[in-house]
Image 1 (tube, rainbow, N blue to C red):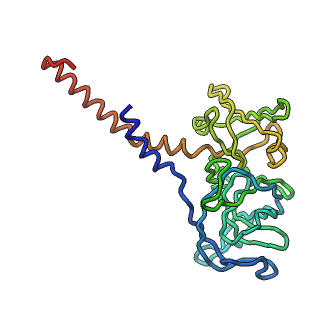
Image 2: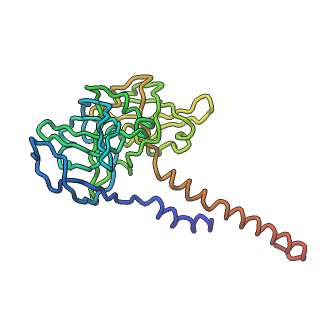
Image 3: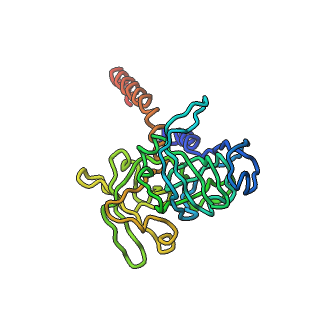
Length: 285
């Protein structure tokens, strides 16, 4: 259709991955700082977000609710702080850098290089949208550093902005493949399509099947033998939660099309009116 050809360039601009300009602190700091801990300084590093290729499985050290968090005006407020241990995630880390923790893009607020530990804050929105608030010391988490501009992307464009939580309702094996069936709400399932991308606990995966019937509402995905040993999902059982981020291309496309639909309807009505007038005038259309 001519309309589709006109809309394609618009969609290409809207959905094109944009590099993120991450504000960081303590530029070019070597592992050390004060007793190996880094807390201050400032620079700007150009990075984009994530690929969904998990770099390592980290371990939760602590999850604390604090009432001494320093706010922008110097006052104190309440907040939740998560401490995670991860050797790969700490390689090249700096204060303010983005680290994907089980699918959630979080900002490093403190770095302890000798112990390979970093701290991040969990905002109320993060606690509502994800299951990170239920983590305990010793819990395993998927970790991925933000990828640099020009790096290869073996997964898909993952923002680290979790859309909601899915629940495992079944799991089984087929030879060396491990399958999972996940139930999600309609507002997520509408963006999940067979053979499309989905990020689950920060892992870029391909959707196998989708069932949108009211009494079903699930999709399946499969883990190959190699991936099973590199991520935390195989450790989970029926009833466990998963952080779900649908493919942002679907959301951008829906938004772009929704914005032009009223104009399309208006034009269609005008065409119908014109055709009617031409018909009344005896002009063959």
